[in-house]
Image: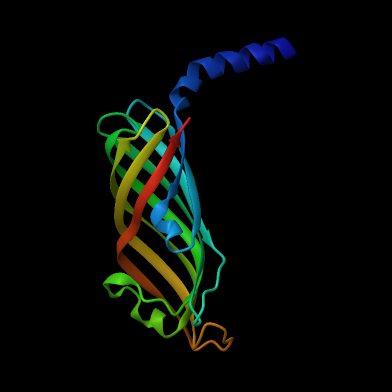
Length: 188
C-alpha cells in the first residue's frame, strides 16, 4: 500500500511538477521605504503564466503622531508576453487588508483628510497591472510594476492618532493606483 502511494506521488510529481518548476520570492523595495515589511512568492502555472501571493505589514508608529499601520494581501495572475519571469507582463490582482493610519500626506491628493485625522478600517478591491522583469544573473531579477483598479474602503474616523473617540464612520469608493513596485526577485 505504501509503495503504491509512493509510485502515485512520484508519477504525479513528475507529470505536474514541471508546471511549477520555477518559483521566485520577492520583496518590494518601495515598500521598505515606508517601513513596511513585505514579501511574496510567485510560481509558474503554464508556459506563459504565473500566480503570486504578496503580503505587506507595518506595525510601527512614527514620531509626530504619524502611523501607517496595516496588513495587506495581494494575489495576482500574470500573463507573460515572452516567458515567465522575463520581460513584460500584464496581470489581474485582488487585494484586501486592514489599516490604522494618521498624519500622512499621500501623493495625488488621495485621502487628503489623512493628514489631520486618524482612519481605521478595512479595504478590498482589485485591478490590472503591467510590469517588466530584467535578468540580473542566474538567480536574481529586478522587476518594476504598476497597477490601477478599484478599492472599497470602510473606515472609522478619529480626531488624532491616539484618541479613542470616534468622530464619524463611512466608506469610500476609490479608483486609481492600487500597486507600485520595484522588486528584487530571487529565482530558485
